[in-house]
Image 1: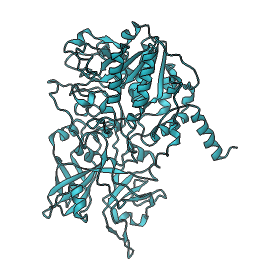
Image 2 (image 1 turned 90 degrees about the vertical axis):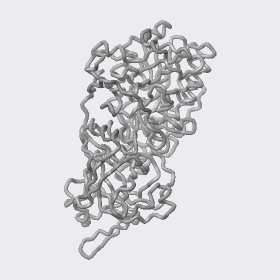
Image 3 (image 1 turned 30 degrees about the horizontal axis):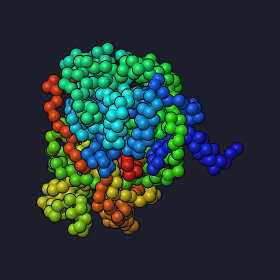
Image 4 (image 1 turned 180 degrees about the horizontal axis):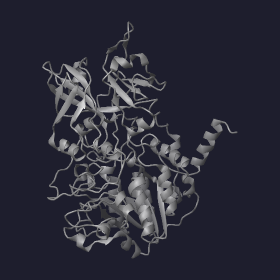
Length: 602
């Protein structure tokens, strides 16, 4: 019987044989292990030598600013960012140049949504507003856009195509969906839209199309001409005119738009379909996604879809023989997940959030902003929540200024997240990265009051980094009764999957008592978690995490909540209900560690 070390060594050796490239990509390294455990070796081809030629097409899926985490060349994007998405840009540029030089077609897709698109949370969809027409978030990530422009200047077959531009139907895949129930369960749509879309007419607006863009030669981010959709050419017919028979898909996100591109091209009649795995990244929302440290879709289910459609997964080295593969397995492991670790998080001022508090009842009520309250109504969430006892603010002046806590603030309290409503876990997770108020509704935060007990500031806890917690400590059961009335349900999918059922915030220097044995849990505050529904019970897994003393003055957050407002515009005058697939109604409450360049899905 092999020893555990031998099993681990054998597993690592198998993964190395996959020849996947991934510089500074620990999450991708984790994802390779998850897919290996799910049996992806059955769909993997890491050794064949493929000769790229005119019969091939490289589909670069949604490499746009809003799908890339914010960085120096993408300061205003990241609204719907995919973790480590920027890390694959250089590799994709090399693939684009290789395919174009070999006479193959290169096609870059653009998600191109109207402001009231059916997939957006304000319209009842599961995703934050992103890639809105005319907004910089819809533009290509600079390395990709620059490469497209170079290839077009050389006269290569380098095309830009658009998808998701009809307000009443979405499209993950770059090729059209069949008119069948599984399609409409997969992509957002309004089956009773005022425009009358249904069935095959709805299907005709899925996939991507080539549109006339009068300024595209000078600007790859140019908008399509106003009436061009009436003379649109779908991607399948464009490529078949060039006698393309093999499709290679890469980009964002691997388990949504890239996957559906590879699956749908088989239905469209192309002979072979490949996903270039290391030139793609999977959707990851830490603590919300239920797989590994936060991946959104089950690798085993994805493998089943790949097998059913005969889609192969390959490393980029097959297309780039000269590539010096840098294995993502060489980089440090992703930090331990809950219940060993918790956080880090970010704190961000919710300047527009207006709360009224009832300190005696331990409750708060949301009174604004109106737009966020309306979003709650869409998902039947009551705008009230529980709050803990007040504690005196002990921060020094410099830290108060850095966190934008006003001088008038005297006390603070922890405000717990709002109720479930009809939010599914994916929509609620993505809702949390749209505005600071939304982050407070989903994860909670700190409520600051003046000497008259009026709310003067709110700090939202959000996905990101800046505030860190210690490794897990064993909870002392005899003090659970000291927190009576403060234990709240844990609804974060990852934490519930690990067994946590109740949690509570403990104020800095708060003294818990049990007889004559007082206990100061933490100088800076702590979260405690119970692995049972009755606080009177005891479980060896019960833990608490103390906040570390050092807090970064610069917080890094996910989404666009800390640096850019969502683009605004006029919605459709007659919005209609949206068809959503049935999903579990869960709320993420707490989260796990977020690597530095981490985020979300396309």
